[in-house]
Image (spheres, helix red, strand yellow):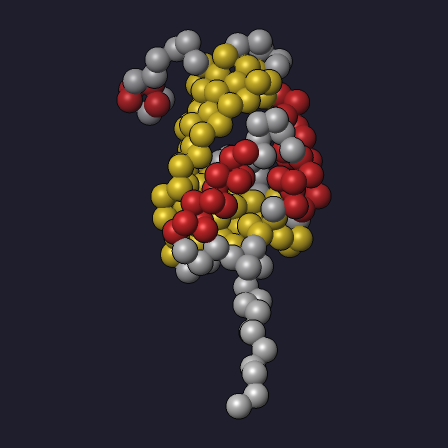
Length: 146
């Protein structure tokens, strides 16, 4: 019987919960400090980004520019991402972040939910919803609904 070559899986996306959890942890690590090149490299060339109320943008160069703008504004950024689910090529996570707003000089905090659709081991679609407020100001439900 002839040996068969080991078939390489062409799809490099996380396939197990442990792989997806490790991917989320890896992405988290790239924000502290900001590793703009590695962050951008984690996106597909033709990626689509829908990040809160930011107008939709596309492509790895636009992703890098987005992270460069954020890193200039968000000083001492601290981020915790928590894996939530893996279904097929889709990973979801939640995050909590704190930073100092470089323009206003005030402490900020945020919370969000992200959906990543993966392609060939990179993020092809990034959809995010989030809330941001000053860290020193508690927010109530009534405040959030204004």
